[in-house]
Image: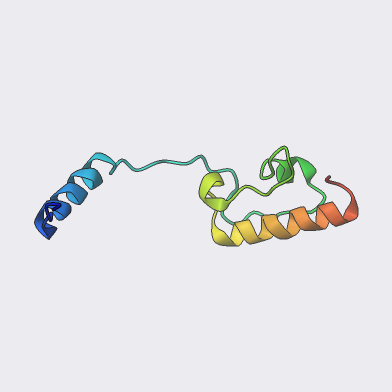
Length: 85
């Protein structure tokens, strides 16, 4: 029969893990907070797309949700116009 670990042991393990991983990551700011995303600015849009053409998530690039939506629409419009593959 397996031994039952109490909640106390689990909480202690969770607190120990949280203390070890509590370093805050600082991300490089790629876009200014109120910058305008232009569909014709292909060099800017290519920084947010992988080599396979997939849009990189905001949690990796470090941009805000509003900026991610602008990037998404910009990349999709550039693809439709044939500026990006």
